Amino acid sequence: MGEITTLHYLVVAAALFIIGVIGVLTRRNVVIILMSIELILNAVNLNLVAFSRLYNLQGQIFSIFIMADAAAEAAVGLGILIAFFRNKETVNMDEVDLLKW
Amino acid sequence: MTPVATPFFFYFLSILAVVSAIVTITRRNPVHSALALIFTLLALAGLYLMLYAPFVAAVQIVLYAGGIMVLFLFVIMLVNIEKAELEERFNKQWLVATLAAASLGGLLLFVLRRGHGIFPATFQNFPEGENTQKIGLQLYQNYLMPFEIASLLLLVAIVGAVVMAKKRV
Image 1 (tube, chains in turn cyan, red):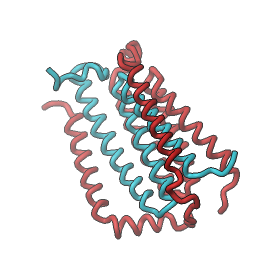
Image 2 (image 1 turned 60 degrees about the vertical axis):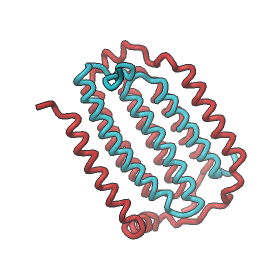
Image 3 (image 1 turned 90 degrees about the vertical axis):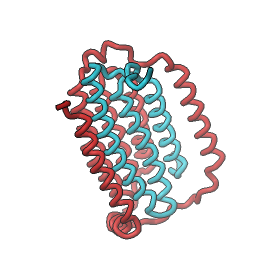
Image 4 (image 1 turned 120 degrees about the horizontal axis):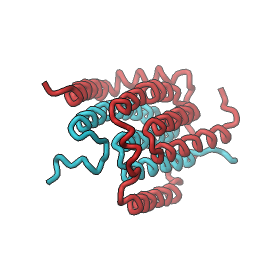
């Protein structure tokens, strides 16, 4: 266990990002797809904060904006999910085809 | 304050974050996924503390673990989870999707391995006691316009969520 460098944090963030991408691409439950999007945003935040350690505070400020964005995205996404559930009585991603013909 | 046992806490928190993230995307019950995601978010807050970003760590706990996860749990209770638990968890293209994401991960690791020499090896020294004051000053001076736009975005998101979730009259 040597010195922890920025590269270590970037590797952890890359792992979280890939796990989030796999979740978005493979799951069928819309709620868990939204959680995977949160994982992706968190991985980006970890990258920004790790780089802000090297340069200045701008990365931390950007990560706070991304958190506000994530809150807005979660609220709107879950609102869409509730409207969809009221229409179709399911949370399955494969049945989201109202705009498809 | 100088940190103690940095490698131990780094590996502990990052393994906790990655394992909980894997649990999040593999559980059948969405409530279990939400609980695992809370562990990921708390471990990330610990990593932010190790990176001398106490304000971001506090915002992470308050906003993510406190706010967004409550929203998720409410929505899980509003939708029908018994039916979703009986269905197949993964869709038909899961193998192709996992391979594609894994190759993207390989590309990321390759770029990090080849490119990590271009950023400086030494850390800047930020006194963590002044972190919050500095972020506040930056937000209200250099980033005032994005700050106001973010408030507008949140207002639009609130109105949109209410309109979308309300019953048709």
